[in-house]
Image 1 (tube, rainbow, N blue to C red):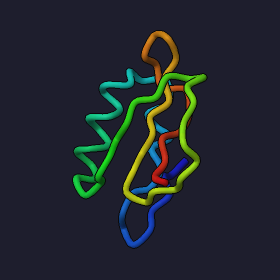
Image 2 (spheres, rainbow, N blue to C red):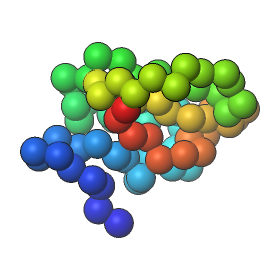
Image 3 (tube, one colour):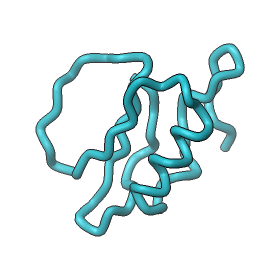
Image 4 (spheres, rainbow, N blue to C red):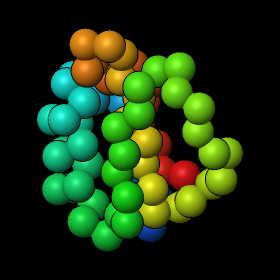
Length: 73
């Protein structure tokens, strides 16, 4: 599955599901240094529902494994 891109900027990282959260965060920051915020979030955490185009949430389980496709927004 190809990652979704807008104007040649990657907006999803499906290949990171199942990877370590810290490694996923580093990959996203390296591939898109223009992002303001890349945040690791533990599954079940309470979050705000604001859509922020230059933020990516990396959802992880208790073992720090990425559980959802990281996406901008």
